[in-house]
Image 1 (cartoon, helix red, strand yellow):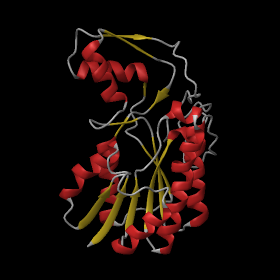
Image 2 (spheres, one colour):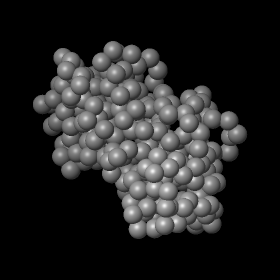
Image 3 (cartoon, helix red, strand yellow):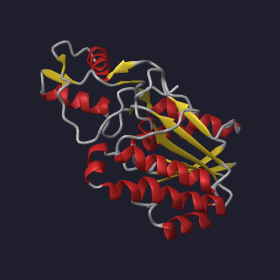
Image 4 (cartoon, helix red, strand yellow):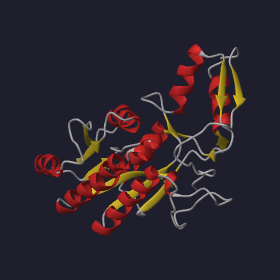
Length: 256
């Protein structure tokens, strides 16, 4: 039986994996929240691996607050870069395959076409830079790894665009949403199924993947779809492209 460790298990992808894993009886999946296993604490990671004997580690632990990362980048780099470096070093020591979740924000968004895995990253905010540095640490340290970049991840769990829109719809009749960014909203359940399925079959063939649902939308169009799907006909979604962000966002977040 393959033994799998999931870090950051209380995040939205971690919670999706908790929902999916029981269907895969041939896998023994152990879930650790960031409080239970802090990837910035290398001694804590070592202790977990000594006891665990893991074949795979799915790293869902990340600092994802894009705006706050611009204000306090040290926190983002501590988790997204140094924490990932810790995990890579320990995984290498125990011959554990590391599956690491990364982001479309490693690209600058200036390309007219969707980004491929062969495109050179060029992040334009501190969050993206911290995630790219984490990727580089893995690539420098390990051979048996898989980096999965995804975009606009959403689910019923935690704080994401989907849950934020539904929360706002409870109190606001008019939702003002930007129409300037283009991307592929990706259901975290689909990403979770892909990861667990590939582990079951030993099918990871590449070191870097792009995984999305590949349905092109702006944030405005995504909000309209959410409102329509939930049959909230009394709610109105309008353009608001004057939102001032501290952190720059790539205008094209499509990854192929």
